[in-house]
Every structure is written in C-alpha cells, then in structure tokens.
Image 1 (cartoon, helix red, strand yellow):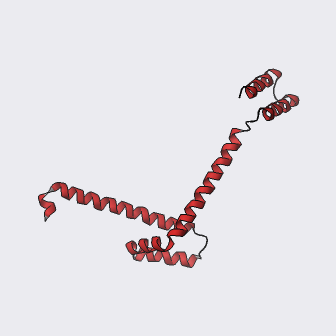
Image 2 (cartoon, helix red, strand yellow; image 1 turned 30 degrees about the vertical axis):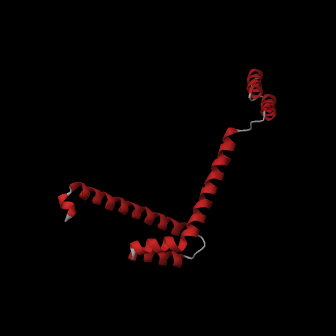
Image 3 (tube, rainbow, N blue to C red; image 1 turned 135 degrees about the horizontal axis):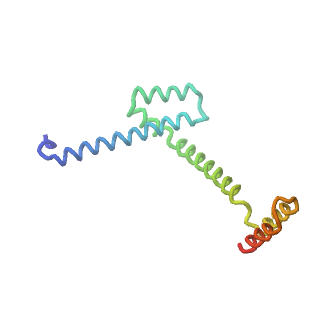
Length: 131
C-alpha cells in the first residue's frame, strides 16, 4: 500500500477521515436540531425522519438536507431575526433614552418625589446637556 511507504500520506489520510467524520457529526446534529425545531410537521413525520437518519445515517442526513434545504434556511433566518430583535430590545431597555430633555424631565420627577437631591439633579442635568 502506498500509505505504508509514505508516512506523511498516511497521516494526511487519517486527518482527512477525522475531519470528514467531524463534519458529518456536525451535519447530523444540525439535522436533528432542525427536525425538533420544526412546527410545520406532525410528530409522526419527525419520528420517521429520525428513524430514517438513525437507520441510514449517511444517506439519511444527505436526503434530509436535499429535501429540506429551503425550510432549514428559512427557519435559521427566522431564529436569527428573533434573536436579533430580542437583543435590540434588551439593549434599548438597558441603555435608556438618549434625549436630553427626556432625561432632565425624569430627573425633575425624581427631584420632586424626593428620590434625589438638588445636587444630584444638577449633575444629571449637566450630564444630559453634555451629550
């Protein structure tokens, strides 16, 4: 065999097999995640896909990717958009308002209620006007 006379070729071949196996595992996990994430099919269809992928692992993954590639992409896009919207909403809630007049008005309400002192209100007002 050629790999026995060239050790580098043997190492290269085993590395290639290892990375192919890792890629297949990644595709397998992606397919299972997509099957469980789907809301447009029944539980029986999901069970059949899972059985097909377990009984015929390589063929099952390839057939699922070929048959459901557009749906997988749409579901991934929707999930990323939902995550982005949630992150944007969180950032807006934490950042507060950037409008100086609104910040001063909130500070005035806090001053009137006695939650802050006049010196704290003046600092808040100065910071709001500086931005």
